[in-house]
Length: 128
Picture 1 (cartoon, one colour):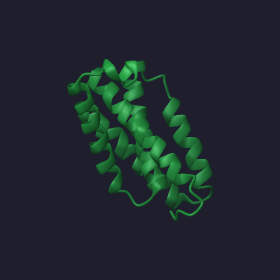
Picture 2 (cartoon, rainbow, N blue to C red):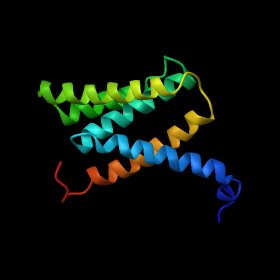
Picture 3 (cartoon, rainbow, N blue to C red):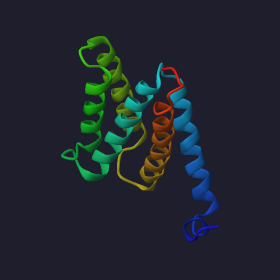
Picture 4 (cartoon, rainbow, N blue to C red):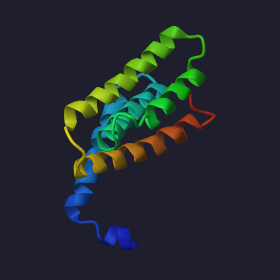
């Protein structure tokens, strides 16, 4: 067991697992991996601005770049991606009112989800 894991209490591990399961269940409802990625970025955007201020646009900028790549000239697809981004943003807005330990747990769960989505997006045999 690594030192970081040794310091994690069972309650912390349970809360993180609960957050990961919730994030995963929310992603299943979307039509594509790209939409799930947009939603994930919207969630991360809200949480980052909650903790670092409205001036921090890191995840919104990444989402905008992704949409430029995934929906060039396709306004309907871009609209769906924006809708997914906004859905993620408002999910977290409804869940959190201030920067806290629960925000850190959600960020960790969303980061793990993003790693999974990136792996799926990079799979040349996966249809999306």
